[in-house]
Image 1 (cartoon, rainbow, N blue to C red):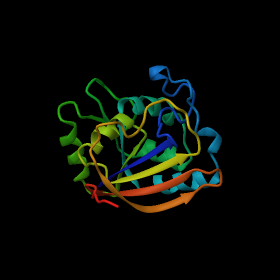
Image 2 (cartoon, helix red, strand yellow; image 1 turned 135 degrees about the vertical axis):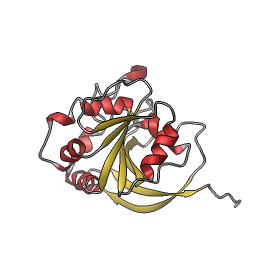
Image 3 (tube, helix red, strand yellow; image 1 turned 60 degrees about the horizontal axis):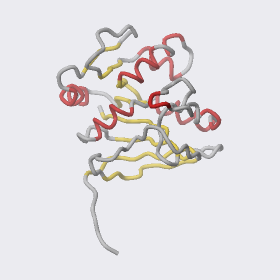
Image 4 (cartoon, rainbow, N blue to C red; image 1 turned 90 degrees about the horizontal axis):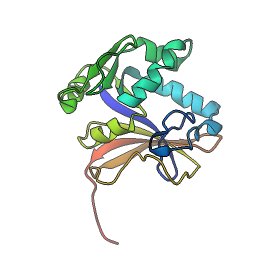
Length: 200
């Protein structure tokens, strides 16, 4: 399976708490819910397309806790049906049990080894949604194959960013781009390797 990451970011790269004010207030963040005003039919179609390709899901601890508190109560749409029926893996060194049906805890001893083993299983996509801290760790080991980056036309000025200083230099190829009616630019990038450099 290949690992795909779907991530919402602002123009200034903030990915923290797109879905609601209480989603992630760590660091004193008070601007949660910034993606909600841009929800529209185009966005919904894209999300349905993404979830139709999933064979399993991979979460960081914080995202798992948020999703496990919400999605098991939902049903009847591609997102909830996918989350509730397919295998889920949560990377954590502290979680002792996972009550969401179909969830396995990985990464206690060797996260890279565990994720590499998951990638070697047959299937289409092992999907990540959010999970910024985990994504950074996997980017550092070239384990994320595809990034769906949804860039929202808003600047927040503070908050957690997907790509922090010190990340592994990586080149990507733009595989597709579309813009929703509300102005969200959805770009799909495939990992290509190391960047090339030149001079003008």
